Length: 377
Image (cartoon, rainbow, N blue to C red; front, side, top):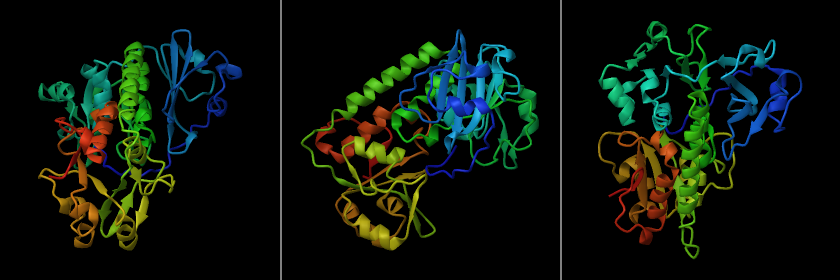
């Protein structure tokens, strides 16, 4: 399972000439791709969907966006439709057997009623989806990683239709046979909560569950927008600090990040909202204390089995704990050890948003129990 703040390596560009045209947003392309029409995508920025009759085309992108193509996948068509020399992977039928390098993908597949398609998964002890956990407990799902890394031979024995991976670094994908299709999933790169949730539509295309995926996503959009509209218009947006410390350095999400968007949508004022960057911002302690002194609320993502205390959110730094957010009860957290923060939460952005609204505007919380983000008790 990936951590809260992830490294972002450069994924390889596949070099298909037509993809430069595909990424520009037109409805058709010249040459071998002219038959394909763009399917509108609502919020996601790191995949595209195209159609030709009953066939579907999925493009996946890495950290560089549409100039960083990481995969071209055709579902329900023959090889000729891809054009000579293309690097498209063709699945004549929807996927039926898959292996996962990240447990975060399990919730998307389970939501499409295809938990039974998962035959292998890395780090099964970190699974949170109940249906996929049941598959593992019944021996119908195999662990494909060990202390030495991904088990190449075990994956080969499972003979999956594809291996789901993620487009950074070489973890897991090194030394795997070239004939095994690898599908990079980059939902974690999305800057908008609804963009992250929209990856259900990419999974829907791959598993032949497009109508269900579209219906699920439409419901997510409706619930999220309804929840966002519940923030009282007259409420003053409290200042919010959010980040984590490692060996004396604090890392905070940039102003154009997923977390910054959630805080804003929840009626908070993120203290680094004006600082855009391709990744996280690293701060020294002096800056943390200076900016953090303005915060009414201070949040952090953790991964720990024990109950969360203020010291955990503060990185056990007494100078941070002396700031107003800590002395006046403004600490909050999400704990990936006890909730599916990087899996199911992606499909329930309205729940995440409601948690934050209840924290920033407690008069609205009522008796509702938080799901992902919680105030420190």
